Length: 88
Image 1 (cartoon, rainbow, N blue to C red):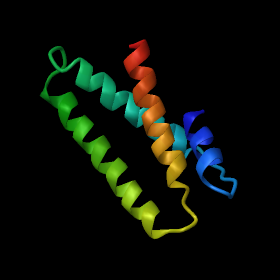
Image 2: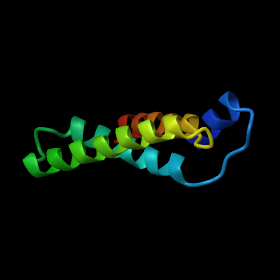
Image 3: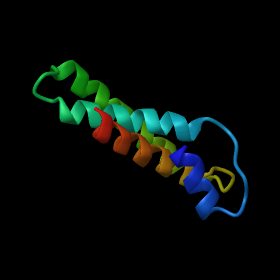
């Protein structure tokens, strides 16, 4: 929802797709791993690094394509991180 809201607020063109939701899941995962670093082992930290690398690569590729709605990506990531921080 936060990705769609960011897209609607900051872009004049409508956008479709689930990428904002996927970025929200990555944001929630990264927040969960960071909050539980003492309980999780090194394997999960490697997965977190890979998720963040994929996120950064997607953002860079999105900046090269004017048809990609990066506001939905950023909004989804921040919304997922916020929700994971509040709920768990």
